[in-house]
Length: 406
Ligand code: NAD
Image (tube, rainbow, N blue to C red; front, side, top):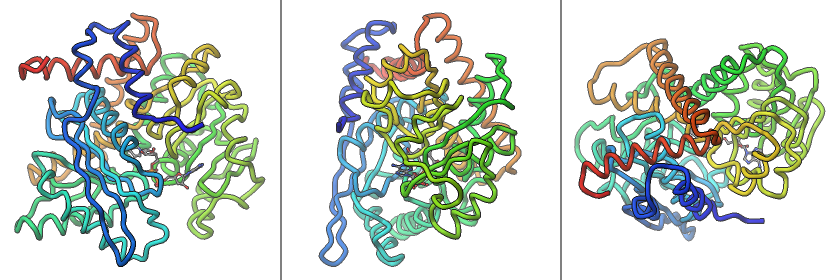
């Protein structure tokens, strides 16, 4: 059944009023975005609705990726922008949250058309964005090349160089070393600390990954290199399964050649993959994947939410009853925005760091954030998601209060 993820997130926040140190009136700040911008991008007789939503900017300029997907909707972009606000506060970086989206299937566009809608997006929203106002980045089906076109368009309009306008750029245009794998590295640091603090032997852990794009492919490679056994992986066309463990470098080669994972070894349906017997399930595709319909069938002990919003709130309740540990998206995939922040800092200072320095700083940020949340989980006997949301809401409300708004 379709779940409105924006309303679902508002419900989660409302429920926190019962366990957090804030009142209903203060939580009103989170009930709607501060600014919403709409446009329509046009190629020939094709029209594509486009959005840029700036949810909360109390802690700094808003930050968030741009998604190209046929299912993009206003409420999806609102939810993603709200999660960005929380996420930046969870890892304590000086940003608010935003998100952009275009309702388009980029796989059906030529390269020239893809460039044209990317430039049109910037022409539509350039007045609302900028290095000190709102900083976009890649998301589902948007790439470093798209960021390069967008930067070029912005700089043409403004007549100068503004590398801090957008992150996730190619290195040659001011991108950061380590940004390509940052989301996955951040997720790995969170899992590593959870495993360490619970004294689990990672060498016997079996992993299942849904999604094999930027985030899914990198996390599979990192976990494979760290000695974890990955038994199943899927992409939008289907999944593959091998209980002895998949050879990830070979699967990456296969995917590059065939543009799909199915056929590499024994095939498995996407829905069956989610319900496999395993230690860690890593949703790394889209939202609304674990709902009240399938939550009771999930056998994984830990769910590492690399994707944004893969679990609905009613599914969360079912998983909690089943003693499943959900490590939430607002922490787990925050390595992406944290390294985007590092990219912006490098752009603004004009001094660039080596990959080792970037990943070392990322590791410190993620590890510190994990233990802040872990402490709250233990103090209040609540879920990791509730603990992360409470920490984020408290931080945002502090800034709102200092500004005289809460
Ligand atoms: P991507 O476009 O690179 O990859 C998406 C992958 O999901 C593709 O492999 C696609 O085939 C697969 N997919 C789509 N529908 C599927 C389905 N029903 N079953 C299985 N696989 C399916 O996107 P990405 O950047 O890897 O983002 C994935 C998720 O991670 C999104 O929720 C995104 O918001 C989140 N995320 C990404 C980043 C980042 O830096 N890339 C940062 C934070 C959060």
